[in-house]
Length: 456
Ligand code: PXG
View: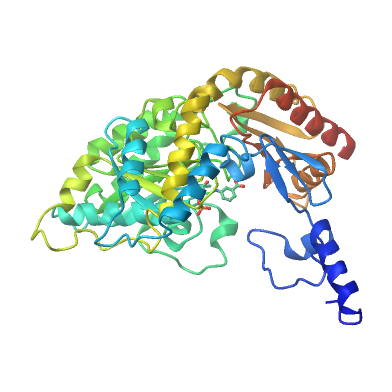
C-alpha cells in the first residue's frame, strides 16, 4: 500500500492509518448485510466500547441505541465477562464436544435452565441464532419420527419472520429480500400471515388490541395440509429484524392452543427477546406462553463470544432417548457447540445480569422509554410508533419509489450526530443495552427527532 515510501515512513503511515481506522486500500473484506459500495465511500467504523458508548477510531463518541445488534444487553466492556473469558483461554482453550464434555458446558446449561421458562430444561448449544434455528427445526422433525410419526415433516413459519440466514431459517422465514436470491429452499414449508396492521393498531403502546384471530391462520393450514403432516410452527414472540412487530393481545395464547389441539410443536425464536429485552428473562415468561422449543443467541454471552442454544422440553429429549445406549441419539452438533470460551462468557454474562438485576430491568425502564418514543408521533413522516419492554419501532412513510431510503437517511444522520440506531425497511428500530438510564433515552429520542425534522 505504501510502495513508494521509504520503509520508516511507510511504517509510520501504516500505523497512522491503523490509528485513524483508514480502510483505504483494504479491499478484501466482503461485508455482511451491508451496502458494500456505499460503505466504502463513507465508512462507519467502531474501535472501542464501554458501557452505553462506542468510540470511532478518531475518538468520536457514539451512544449505542441498539446494544450492538440486539446483543450487548449488559452494556459494553463488562469485567466479569472478559475476566471469565481470559481465565478460560489460559485453563483450556478447546475441548471436543462429541462423545466428550467439559464441566463448564454442564454448568452453563444448568445456569441457563435455571432462568428458562418452566419446563424448558434441556439445553443444546450452537454458535449463533441461525444455527439454533436449524437445530430446533431438525429436532422437531426428528422428535416426531422418534415417536413414530415420521410423516410429520412440514414446518410452518410466518410472513415477515426472521430466523437467521441458513436454508431452514430462510425457508420458514418471511423476509422477501432474504429469500428471493436463493432458489427454492426447503420443501414442505408454509406460512401464516404476519400481524402487522397499521389501519387498526397504529401508535399502540405495548401489545396491540387487534389481531389475535390471525393465529387462526394455523387452523387454515391444518385444514389444508392435515395436522398429521405438520411438525412445528416457528415464530418470534416479538419480531425484531422485520421492524419490531409486537404480538396482538391473545395472539400467542391462541397459537399455543391450536398447536396443543393438533400435536404441533411450538417453537419460539427468542434470539432477540431473550435475556431481559422485554422485562422478563424470556419473552415466553413475559407473555405467559411456553413453547416446546426455544432458540436463543446474542444476549446469551452479551455478544462477547458467538453462542446460541436451543431449549427443549423434557418430553422432546425423552423421545430421543431410546434404542441401544451406545448409539448416538441425535445426529447433529457443531465443532464449537459448548465451546469453553463461550461457556465462560455465558456464565460471566449470567452473573453480570444477576448482579445488576438486568433480566427484569427493562420492565422498570419501559415507561420512560415508551413516553419518550411516543413523543415522536407528530414528527414528519412518522406513521407509527410501537414499543414493548426496551424495544421500539418508529415506522416512516416511505419515499415514493425508494423504499428504505428515508430510514437509511435517518440512520446516517443519527450516526453523524453520535447515536447508533438500526433500520430495517422504513422502520427505525431501537433496542438499547438494558443498563440504559433516562438521560440516554432522552438523548436518543432527541437525536431521532432532530434528524426527522432536518430530513423533512
Ligand atoms: N432469529 C432471530 C429472531 C434473530 O433476530 C437470528 C435468528 C439469527 O441469529 P444469528 O446469530 O445467526 O445472526 C436473529 C438475528 C437486525 C438484525 O438488524 C437482527 C439479527 C441479525 C442481524 C440484524 O434486526 N437477528
